[in-house]
Length: 254
Image (tube, rainbow, N blue to C red; front, side, top):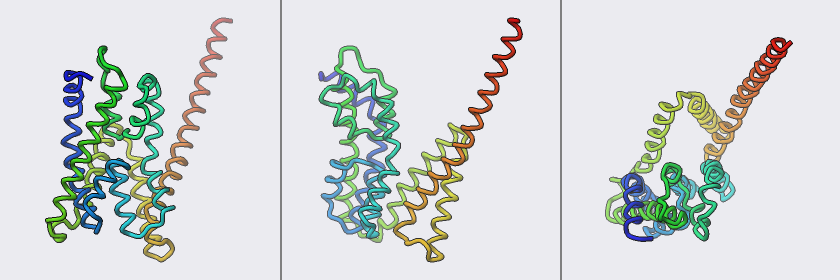
């Protein structure tokens, strides 16, 4: 890739730079605050590179959650990437040897860029998409590394509660999503199912390490029930409309 195309990739990914630095630093601080060595931020960001999944993984490790619970939780948290991948089958058709890395490095922000950018005519799709993905991951690694190194010199009492950065991030994303979709059903279901899991824990029915996975499972089940019945009704009304329209057309022809 020539310098011009690389500069274009840097320009396109510059918003991600500021976002990943801002969110990566709290991750590094939280990791060190939980008692893990600073270099784990580098290892996790290079091999796992899951953003929210990394935040959650550290919390689960620190709470003593089982590997089964961690695996299932991470699957549910990142299951949206299946949809991302399906929508990129055509754009990634001619990326060649870059495809495995592009699949690995597909984060929310990288996906947003790749679905909104047009590959320059003089650029190879694989190299151009690869430059975007590599730059985004380097931003995340840099942010988490800065936070982890700084965490070695900052007393724990000054960085307590820094893991709330993830909660704040999701809150902002939720607000923006509600503004765009005007759909309050998913967040309401999420709040209710989370409250249910917490209540079950408080009354002694549910162990604390299973609160998150239980809330996620209940939420998915509730969404399927609500959206499934709504989808069925919509399909039924559509078929009724289509059939009535066909009948009217037949009568007109007669």
